[in-house]
Image (cartoon, rainbow, N blue to C red; front, side, top):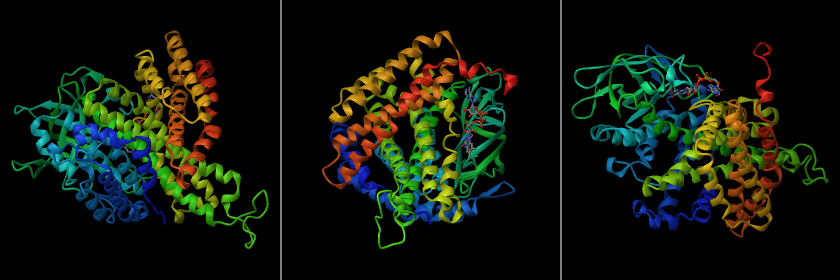
Length: 578
Ligand SMILES: Cc1cc2nc3c(=O)[nH]c(=O)nc-3n(C[C@H](O)[C@H](O)[C@H](O)COP(=O)(O)OP(=O)(O)OC[C@H]3O[C@@H](n4cnc5c(N)ncnc54)[C@H](O)[C@@H]3O)c2cc1C
């Protein structure tokens, strides 16, 4: 059975030793009531929920899956009590606005809690993450009445949410959408059309479902400049804010998928459904991006949670499974064989997962801290930094999560391929993370195009200068300086060359995102090595840092030469040769 234990010690190390949140929180009026004891208690309670309530129904949710019958969708029965505890514990409102029933905790702390929930049960937490994202979107762009009506219900989990963007002909290119919105006399709209792949679009875990739907108002311009955003509730709230009459939105089917079997992925049909506009007409995509940016970080955390879950199983297995002898002679002479852990290649796999997972956890918290600073201090650089880091968080964390899951499955040998052990489920479940919420190739384009080339590399340069100003242990000083120089050098090269070749950014983008991820992780690993305590935990941290610098960071050189090779090798092949 898949077992999950929240990595509380590592999380506390990152909070208090690496990020030194005590100082930061003490200076922020929004976090006046928060201290180390409360943060520890939050982590501990979330960890209990994750390991004792969510994780035990992970494999059953996958096995049973969801059922569709005449528009009604049943989530796995075992999810119901677990969802109720997730909701009733107030976990979906952890970082939500206190003015509307949220708990106002920092996002940096929220990232840790979210990682636990993803790691414990991805299929189940998919019903929660969209409520958090929808609440953030309504809080940023909704009217006061919409905030009063929807936020408390979403934070409490009584109502859940869905994000309705994708249509058969409009995936990455949302400008192609055809769902229509006709203005009604009372200021509402009537929504008609269909969407596909809508996570939690219909299910039986919550009283009501708040769909955030993008559609084109009649006569609006084509493309992304003609998209508006609407709240389309499954049940129209009555005058007391309770679910009233059924709206014209229904599930036409659910998808049969490779993974996340417990999560209902719906084809949604809208027939003159009542929609309430959020934000201005034709400005809907920008509003939707508030939710999408939340979900992008969340999907990165999904990858991270999967990496941690996979590591825990594989490390345990490698200690118990006896096969072969250590290259230097028997380590376990009383038995017929040594444990897998004696083999250098098995250690390579485990340490790779560990370096990416612990580095990724620190990286996700960095994004969370930038979001907190942007929200509470209004500092534009913090927002620019969060914007720069978000596509990296989505893509790098989810790619490394998938890589980690496959490595951990490999540690199990043939048993990793057999359902009973659960490793194949982790691989199937996390495979979606690099695909949805903007495929990772598109994240890489966002990073290179919008976040780097558009400002001539300005925000990136400032961030690198900040990283380079930090003290790090002597052994990492030189490799880290080279890593920064490499990233800055290749960025300058791209800024200079991109205007001459329109294919260059796209040909370089995935390598560039990976290079940025590796470089930032290297800085975080050097800082973690510096902050690590003088005990067994700290020693393991420093050894993992050394593994990262010696075994993983060298990939940066290969990525740099691939970027500098330009677009020719990618674009010269004629179409008919494919
Ligand atoms: C299980 C699941 C759950 C989902 N949940 C939701 C949900 O809740 N709400 C929702 O709205 N959608 C949801 N989706 C849809 C998902 O977000 C899309 O599938 C995804 O964004 C990609 O769109 P697409 O499938 O149409 O692929 P396409 O857009 O056809 O892309 C195919 C490939 O081409 C690449 N590509 C496309 N355009 C470009 C470009 N301009 N430059 C470079 N490369 C490009 C992409 O990176 C991708 O690898 C879900 C999908 C799945 C499978």
